[in-house]
Length: 182
Image (cartoon, rainbow, N blue to C red):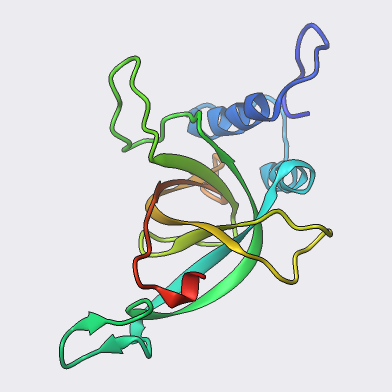
């Protein structure tokens, strides 16, 4: 557990994640020394799910890009590497620094928040690809369920500035004609 409940009640994953984000957004030093990377890894192992993280290399065009027309056909514009990672996501989210506040009572149904390990290093051009639930511990084959554009990345840092994990706002996309997402 990250922060003990004064009444000894079990804490939900959402409460644990809110505690992690809360500690990192405070300007005061936490009372206890704790390794947030290790806590986050524990959360991922216990409650994370497998996704494909697609990292684009914007310095190199892909085979799907036609430089004469400036358009793509059947795939993305840039070369990419797909990596199978564990992530957590939530519809309810704590607001990050530059996120636009929604009016009270509104819901942004087209976007979610994902929490990624410190070593993933996401950017606004990358994708998170949801896959069907694996039958084993680590999927070897999978079916793409949904592709998500990364809209905003916020590195969650400790008081010394070390990135502990990433808080990533994503938006649903419809990859029309992208054969790499089937």
